[in-house]
Image (cartoon, rainbow, N blue to C red; front, side, top):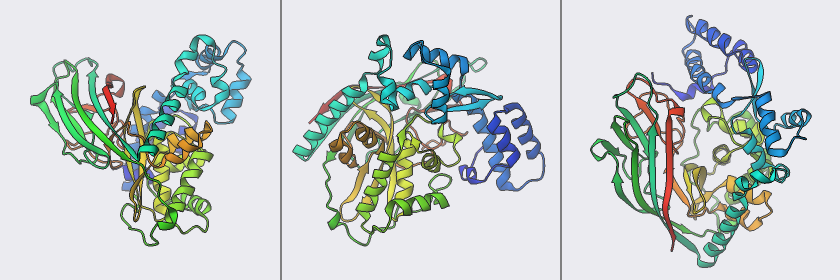
Length: 456
């Protein structure tokens, strides 16, 4: 069945919201089915059908009950960690939780999130586990040195050799059936140059999206009896930008300033927030900087559940004042568009010598400078660590350790997906489906590895 995500903007009935808030999932599904059996408005029907899909993901995000959460916290911080302290963290919204069948459950990565975002907890980690969380300082030192080089030389280029692999766990009763397996590829635009495909695991069964396709993938259609893989090289060419606000033109273009439901929507609250942030400023570059400063200084980084479970991603971030990289980027884009500044999505992977991981960021356009980069997540991290130079850098620039596989938010694959994707907005790790059903996310194992990274 095809779903139109714009119907996430339709409000849920109050009885459904009550049951969802309490986490009474069996009754909630039963109530929704009874509503769907009636003659109800089309828009409401579509919203309820989407909610049934969301409810499949909801409990998977919150696997830890109170006892399991306390066990992890004591193992990490010591036996003196108390129930009262956990309650205080809940009051501060420092650990994400939800009611599942009337009982408190915590998000799958709540502990790691606590350590990553609050220095006082990182310092309390027991000695045996500290090495696990040491990467942050190493990453900061690497980026500080790289940024100094970029500013000194006026730019830098990176040549990156990548291999991406997808393994699909056997699913009972589906042996021998073909799947459509999509793995991300770099889009040949913006900072990406000289893409070269080196190898494919199933060359006769692969379709590669065009070079500038907005969510670029290689799609394999074959039996998943061996891993799907793609290997390639590409370059990122980064030029240092330090635009002078006084040279920004008073008249700016209007492309990429429109709404795009259900998430890039100019809601009353987001309009109020934009007006509060921008104030009486009229210079477009200074307006964008005020938006960046708000996100990087007023919001705390936090891992999010699947975006599909949020009816409005940027408004979620703007009301909770917590967000991961994608929520921050999407909020920046939305607020910029409300302020009349063209802004668009760029996302894929962070590919550095220390790690390869999923990441989202943004671009915004200021005439006469053209498209500039913005990474509120990296900028916010720099701000919290007291690294002002790095904080300023990520407004207008990004580092070369990126693989942009998405130039548009909420875009179809080149080989269209037949069902609702696990992440219908972004493509970072890859997705897979059978002819008649999506491969469950827990059965899809993707690995992205940088075989070599060379700066030049």
